[in-house]
Amino acid sequence: IGCRYCEVACPYDVRRFNWEVVKDENPYTPEFGVPEVDRRARGVVEKCTFCVQRIDRGLELGLSIGVDPQATPACVRICPVNARFFGDFNDPDSPVSRFVA
Image 1 (cartoon, rainbow, N blue to C red):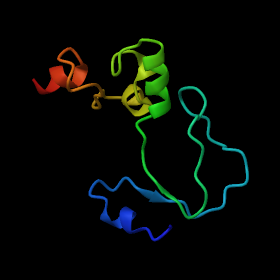
Image 2: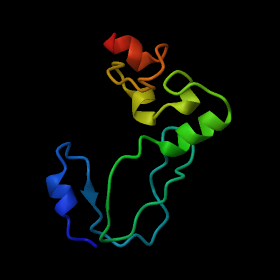
Image 3: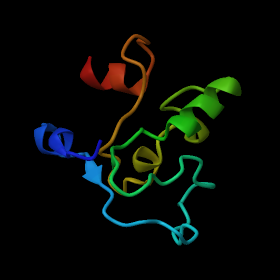
C-alpha cells in the first residue's frame, strides 16, 4: 500500500522503497545471468529474495544449494573474502551446517 512502515520496522534494514517510475529497460546487467525477478513498480517496498530464481532452477537440475554455483545466491558467489555462507541447516553436509557445527 506504500505506507513504508515495514521498511522502518525491519530489524535487518533490508527493505527498500521504490521512489521512481521505471519506464526504461534495466540498465544493470547482473554478474550471473539474466535478471528473472522483475523490478517492482513505484510505491512498492521490496527486499532481497536470496536469488530465489537461481535456487529454484538449481533444484530442478538436481544441484546442491550452497555448493553448486548455479544454485547459490549471487552475493554468496561474488563475496571477495568468502564471508557469506548459504545452505540447508537440516542437511548436516551443507556448508552452513558444517560452519556452525
